[in-house]
Amino acid sequence: MRDYEGPPILAFLDEYGDVETLVVKGERFNGPHAPISLLKDIKLKEIPRGVYIIPVEKIEGSVIYGINPSKFVWSDVYLYRDRAELEIIERAKYWEYEIGIIPFMEMLRKSLKAVGKSTKMIRRVHHHVDKDYHHIAFTVPLNPEMTFEQAMNLISQLFERVEEEMMERVAEFYETRLAAWRRLLRAKKARNAKRRWGI
Image 1: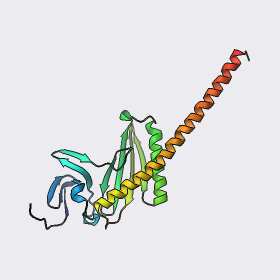
Image 2: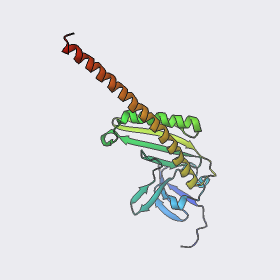
Image 3: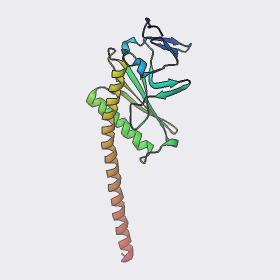
Image 4: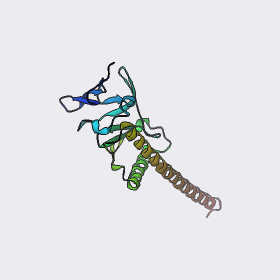
């Protein structure tokens, strides 16, 4: 293929303003997804205003292999020219962690806000529950001079900080549960002793 000389990113929108076709370095993709290998050295300022791009690992036909910057939840990343908007959606029906989804998502919300407070890099954290769907959204401000690769690395680093914060909260959660369980056992033993001695 000959060298592409046009803008590094072109976006064609449908009647609703959503990305219908994305052209990255001359390669066309359906929707807002494009491989990070193609995007990585492009600066965010090249994204057309009002358009977001979802970097993915690869696209094979109609199959899209996503990129997840988090190790403990799945997060979708929408990159704009000056920010990233992230969404975490979990469903109670398919929840597999030992900790219930409600306390887990609440700990995650608090962890995101804590890291946001210390780094000034996580903003507008919002937690919404719709039946058995739990949705957390937040924003990460980005410098338009950053490349896609730099932006994704920064987001991964922030998730590492969030994971550290989560580990502390999970440990505290289990310690609190263990202390409550011990209190319950002591109370039960005391009741049994009274029954045994007819008190």
